[in-house]
Length: 130
Image (cartoon, rainbow, N blue to C red):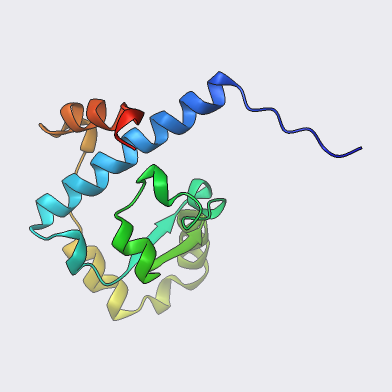
């Protein structure tokens, strides 16, 4: 009578790999920025992946530091790259000073090339820690 939900081993593995990539990414970004998770006042998650998640229900997966979830500081933004590109294309003459300031302070950090990424990635794959 009701809908059947089928979860496969591949589904579990994909969740495991996503968590394993996000967790060390957060930790490396905090380290590179020279701060700790308790000093972060707001977190913005963009992209289609984050828009479909309820972080309160996923707390036990340790996707993000627990204090971020408990404090409710995570905002889901959806597909911001597309929205930003469209806005810039239509309003290029009206770029705000905040946008210019942010782009001047941005730095690229390629996590997959970071010295700590492989070690922390492999550690995060281990679900026995949860």
